[in-house]
Length: 119
Image (tube, rainbow, N blue to C red; front, side, top):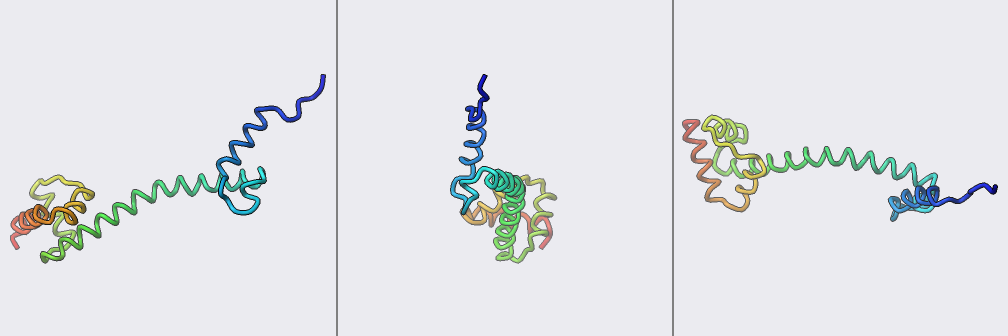
């Protein structure tokens, strides 16, 4: 019985790797052995990037809130402390959107925070 050399499972496994490596530079998108390593590394970067994305957005929201609050003479930490003290539960994403798009209601929140702090 002849030996199966180029079976579909074998081909499909290689094709899957090469499809994931599309657009890579040099032999990384044509040579299976090199593409396999490149795809594995890309997967590690992607996994790490999904975690970093959450951190980066939180930093962005905090800096936007801070910039919005400083216009009214408060710091970010004072503002957040006052919000927690007055039991206002808004997340940072909503607060940063408010600071950019809805300045009137953000001003009301800042005034409420100042009143809570006694400033």
